[in-house]
Amino acid sequence: EINHFVSKADNDILIKDEYNSSVALAGDSLSMDGNVHGISASAGNKVTLNGTTDYAVVAGNAITINGIINNDAFIAGNLITFGENANIKRDVIIAGRDVELNGTIERNISIYASKVTLKNAHVKGNVRLFAESITASNNTKVEGTLFYPEDSNYQGSNEASIGAIEKTPAIQT
Image 1 (cartoon, rainbow, N blue to C red):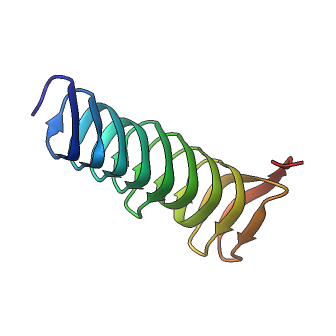
Image 2 (cartoon, one colour):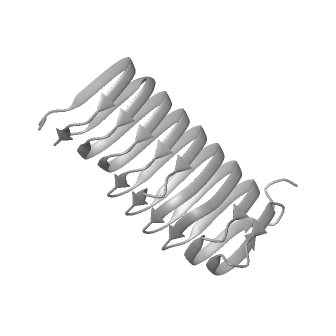
């Protein structure tokens, strides 16, 4: 158990302890498998969050979220994947090129991307998408409203469960 702020910068970093503080990581390959009772700030080429954290700020090229974020998260990257075990207990803002969403979002999510795939996602609030290409697969469940731009290429499965769908003004004129 670590009771002080931790910052690490290296090529490969694995965090697997219990932290009663915030953690800042920077490097090529980062894996946060421990529990952070504070803010997790990570920047790297490949960033993976398998553990638990109170808040997350993540920037990277390839980002994978498989763990639990107890509050809010901001994620920016190129390829962003939320695994089926991902559980974000409050709100999420994502900025990326290609975003695949699985797992559970307890409140609202906003995604700014070129391509968004809602695969095995369960969002208990609203989904606001600002994307060119959007796919909602069979196992998608949105309890609130799915908002997306009228000029997006939207492909939604008839088996997806979406509370309401609302088109927003075009991204491009």
